Length: 140
Image: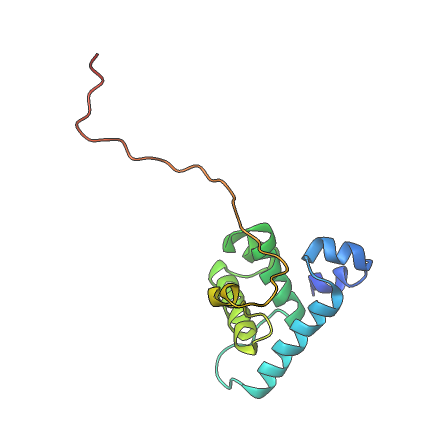
């Protein structure tokens, strides 16, 4: 049987673990506890159980966010079909959002008198292919 990715990563130092996942171990363990508690409270009786342990499901989500990998590539890495990789990522996302621990404040929080510590803005540039104008000629 193939060893889980988490079994390999758990042997890394705290610094290297954070470099790989983007999270400290205590935050990773908090996410793990939230998901395990949710699964205990909401036992699903039908369907095939996941072949991945909870830790690997979390790692898949983190790789999806951190490395912007496609579900096809995630599926290959974890031995799943890409649709199962997508279902797993969406399931973990929904559980974490429902928990309330990882929900971002709305825009209205910026209008209150509370002190804002930091604002992050994603300004990643991507090339956009512009459509060619129809009927335009290059006559000079």
